[in-house]
Every structure is written in structure tokens, then in C-alpha cells.
Length: 114
Image 1 (cartoon, one colour):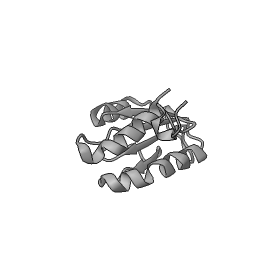
Image 2 (tube, one colour; image 1 turned 135 degrees about the vertical axis):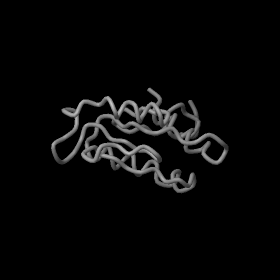
Image 3 (cartoon, helix red, strand yellow; image 1 turned 90 degrees about the horizontal axis):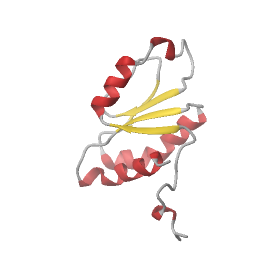
Image 4 (cartoon, one colour; image 1 turned 30 degrees about the horizontal axis):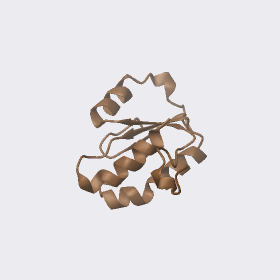
């Protein structure tokens, strides 16, 4: 058994199912989302955490910071907050490529692991 949680395939995962998606796929998925899937008011079963994709206003959403250090700092608190709101599915925009975003990307992949 691993001694450190960071060595596990998934050391933190929200209760909600997390799907990591490229920005284009996230945008396309939101475009085909049936309007009856959106809440009339109040909470939503679906949440979006994204840097560049603007979800419909009635959808629960959080904006991912453009700065990788800020995104890393807030990531788990945002996921816990969405869990506390009762969402069942979180669509997350994949962070940009490159070494600056590697830690955020790794955390998100682990959070999305089954």
C-alpha cells in the first residue's frame, strides 16, 4: 500500500462524477445540452469549471483562473464546494498544455479517475 496519498491513482475525487474535457468538446457538449436539462432557478445537477467556455447562465459554473498557481490553489476547494451544492456531474475544461499546468492537470486526472 502506498504511504502517501499523492502516490495513489485517485487520492481525492468529488462525490460528483468529474469529466475532463478539451475546451472544444466542452463547448460542443454545452451547445447540445437540452434546455430542459437546465434548472428553471436554483441549483443544477451539472456544473462547469472552465477557463474559456461560458456555460448557460442558469447552469452552476465556476471560472478556472488563468494563472496555474491560482488554479492549483483553489482546485479542491471548488470541487468540494460543488459537491456541497449537490451537483452530480462536473464538466471541467482541460488546462492548457505545458509544464506550468502539469500539477493542475495531474490533480484533475486523479480526481476524474474511477
